[in-house]
Amino acid sequence: MELSKYKACICEGSAESAIMDILLDNDLLIFTREELLEEKVIRCRDGKRFEERHLRKLPEEKVSVIRILDSRRENFKISKAYQFMVDVINVITAPEIEMLIIFNEDKYKEFKKSGKKPSEFCKEKLKMTDVKSYEFVKTYFSDPAVLVAAIKKYHEMSKIRNGEYTLLDLLK
Image 1 (cartoon, rainbow, N blue to C red):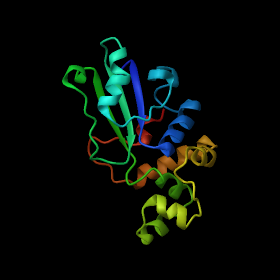
Image 2 (tube, rainbow, N blue to C red):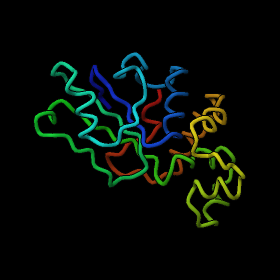
Image 3 (tube, one colour):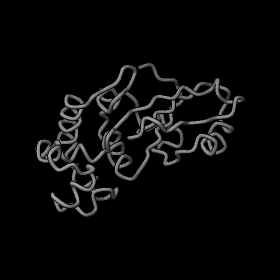
Image 4 (cartoon, helix red, strand yellow):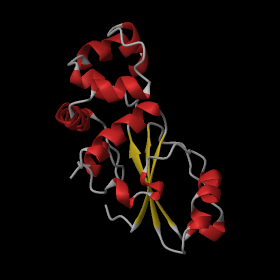
């Protein structure tokens, strides 16, 4: 994975943002917070809005847009005038980012049998009602080594399609 000088890390939700903040704050990624636009994780899923808020302010240089999302179908549409500036890298966390908690809790087999979505399984079976909140995830993975171990387990068990990236690909 080759990244441009300018980078934008876009997260789908609060849980993804918390995970990226932990990894950034502990210098565990192949890029640093200082390399990011505005030096922070961005919560903007709409390509046009991202273009208006960020691309129009930059010199005409390439930007690596690193999107952390669970959907393989979600497009990131940018107007033709700016397409040459953007290199979109989709980091897939399908079916949901909460899989990291399931792997950390060693509940994967139980989860598979349940037939539930990962977030529902965490809420109902693991009694983690705030599983999607930034603060819960930041506290739960307060030890970055635990998060990295969960990312590695998730990567091993995932069905990664050709040309797709996972969080493991972003680790140093």
